[in-house]
Length: 369
Ligand code: F6P
Image (cartoon, rainbow, N blue to C red; front, side):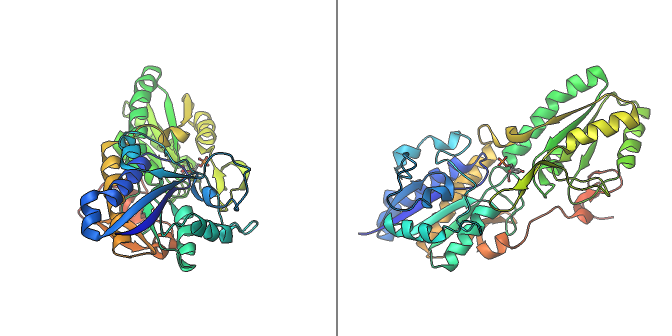
């Protein structure tokens, strides 16, 4: 029987759902019955720490941990129950303009005899996957990111678990906010996309939701808060995306500088807003940043299932020799789209149809009007 090797890696920010996807890549590739039918025997190798696992030149022993490990059905049997990524991840960019190591990646793919690659990641990791594909690598992608900002798919692994975290934390905040008659500002991640804040805010019934796609007026936020109190509310929850901006103000960053993919490190809008609001409204206001809690914890049922389907589909694409594509979930179906389409532009909230710019909240009409 013909033998082929598949490498699998996870890159970028971790999230729940990665391990289920890895597990199902391995199980689908190594399934006895399927191997007999395909007449190809696949071996699956896990690459550690994302692209970092492929950028060390031959003979460089600076990192003593093995960069590559063999994955068997037995190894991955229980992985779908765990959050994070058993393979590790990094934000290493082999095409970093200041340190382009893409040639080493190509050399290492030969050195490890990797016939195919499955890259599980967001816009950065899959952006690299697309460039490698253009250099001749037989590669497929699986979408993951809590930001849900990849184009070409309605779902990215990790998103639903993160929304569950936001909802559960806000449920906890409600009791203490109500006891003290406070306003609570909850800052979510999401970079330039408002999906986490919007869908987390909708799931938890937040009073105000602020997203990067629509610059808000602080005065309007204050007006809505006072209106709420006049109607008898004891407390209010405001969900704000880390990339949200007050009209006329610059984006708020946690630290100066950018990472190797050129992203700013966002954060701090929650604190900033809390100060303003307590001054303007004279109501005690606190802020909490959910930060990496949104990426942690065990995958929810949906992420386990989607990880499973995405992992299976990635191997199907390899079997069909359908490379340069990303698994996608579209209108209820699992399908595949070109990586170029997935990473070409960010998938952002459509303010006109999905956001209420008057009440700074989710839409109030769905079927028309
Ligand atoms: O892209 C996922 C994400 O969690 C963003 O929402 C956030 O801005 C960023 O990663 C945080 O990155 P890091 O884990 O490097 O702090």
